[in-house]
Amino acid sequence: SSFQKKKLRSRQKKLKPYDLSTLSEFLPELNAPKQRAPEKEFKLNCKSRRKLLCVLQFYT
Image 1 (tube, rainbow, N blue to C red):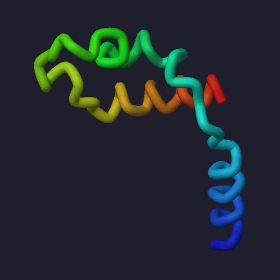
Image 2 (cartoon, rainbow, N blue to C red; image 1 turned 30 degrees about the vertical axis):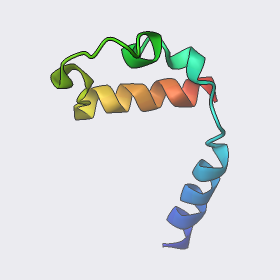
Image 3 (cartoon, helix red, strand yellow; image 1 turned 60 degrees about the vertical axis):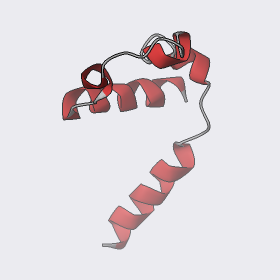
Image 4 (cartoon, rainbow, N blue to C red; image 1 turned 180 degrees about the vertical axis):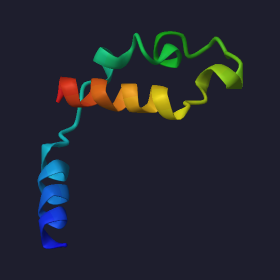
C-alpha cells in the first residue's frame, strides 16, 4: 500500500551515514584488521544483525 511506501521512504531518509568509530566495539576487524579471526565469529545471525541495526539507528 502507499502508506507502507511512505513509511519506508521516511525510514530511508532517516538513515544517515554513521560514524564507524562508534561501531568499533561491535566490529573487531576495525580494531585489529591484521588479526584474522575465525569466520564463524563474523557471521551475523538474525539476532545479532538486528542488534547491530538497532545500534546503528541509535547513533544516527
